[in-house]
Amino acid sequence: MSTPPFSNGAAASLVFPPRWMLLREEGRQRGFKNTLAFRRWCRRHDVPIRTDGRFQWVASSDVDAVVARLSPQGTPSQDEATTVVDPVAAGVADVMMGARTRR
Figure 1 (cartoon, helix red, strand yellow):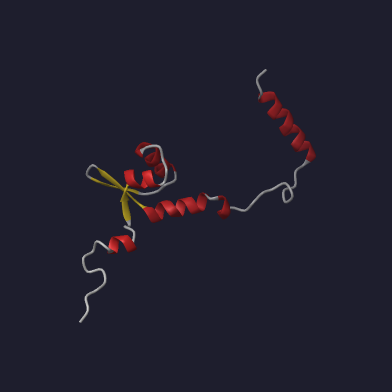
Figure 2 (cartoon, rainbow, N blue to C red):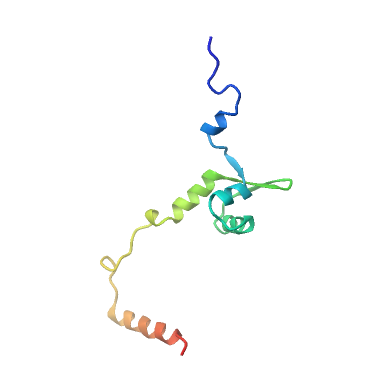
């Protein structure tokens, strides 16, 4: 009779990533400046944060879902070739943008 390949549990964590990660660690892995910046980003994008005493946890899959939704690959492209622009509206926009510049 053979033993399961991951009987001690330590190696299993290398194969299957944990569902919940500390907010601090997930923010560090994602390249945020600090924990507060990542917490604010999560709240702004409705990523659920689980609080357990002094520790805050976030699911990597929830963050991945928001990133996929925000990525440019997930939204249709609007380049100049596919967008019809009214010449009058374009002229008004040019005048308005020019009025905002400081002199």
